[in-house]
Image (cartoon, rainbow over all chains, first blue to last red; front, top):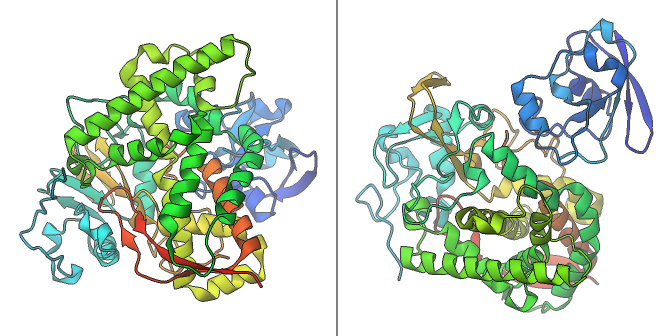
Length: 106
Length: 426
């Protein structure tokens, strides 16, 4: 179990528990975190589960592959730390992870 | 002049899907959408041969991908499946090879798309909401009550045309030209089974190019004269480093203008009509909506799925690739039938039912998946949401009082006529 905090654009925080091996997107959906649409259901194919990973955590996640980079480049507001949460795999090492949600999903 | 489509079978009347041998089932026949008889054909392919090869058709040999998950696989693998040279089933005219980013692969695609996508980015949409609502209200308030009229002309076309004119800052009184050019661009018999001759189409495209070249120069002059900068598409193209010289690359200029006109036209237009038809075919859903208008945003996604205004997108395999047990050869044409994937029982419960409160309604194929996913998705959803918010304030019911007439095409899944009578709220 790892604790993850999602911070909405409004500043509202949601601290939830993640199981080892779950994707960050699934964690958000399972816990009803608003602001993650995940239209494609987790296939790195729609770009609507965009999150911005807090700086301290960026090097600790599995890196984005070429497909994820391609989808992220389509976002009208890409930022450093941008990831698709369906491509981020949770593990107990990530206990305390903090991610922000963008103002809009693409 | 109209060109008649020549079907691959000699039959004048479409045979029932169950009577056709699988190996000769031709879902490219544009009469399937025109006669609204496509459901059984695609259901049979999904169930019996979901990755289907047709060796001969008026559009040449092609593969049909008909299940949701297989379409998602093809759509999100731009390396295995190229979007070049064109994204409709028929091949392009050699004399007029427009360049548009929907039919380019990365990296060129990425550069061009990035230049224009900010126009319809959610941030800009907030700026447009008030104006869109004003125009929706004006159109709805001018409609006759208790009198039959064609919803397609008076609302679906009028509203999308007004919005296009707004997006482009195109002369408002000439806005109907935008719709005409869009219809011309998508109705080539050789490309989509439509009914527009090559001469008509070329003439329309030339007229469109001339009008936009003029608009480009006028807007540049007005800005130089000190007029405040707008949020419209032409201004954004002119002020973006990558596209400020687009006017010097005529085929790319026209191609991308046409892409944006078509992208914002048929799609939203036919979803506007489709929603009215769906609520009439499923009256209990209309009741649910009347009882709870907070369902509107969810209903909008459901309308877009149920309608699927663009029936297909085409790709070409860049290497031999296996899809659901079949080997597609390098160079083969691959057609993803979104209208079928959106009715796939394996991915969507009761897919033929229109449910305003459907769970997970955003999980549909109408916007495509992968790097070519619709960039106007949020604008489309916003237009439809505002329209339905205003409709529900005014009308007890939009009653469909006659048969819908459908477009002849294998690409545009839409309506030419939807006779309705409005009943005002008590």
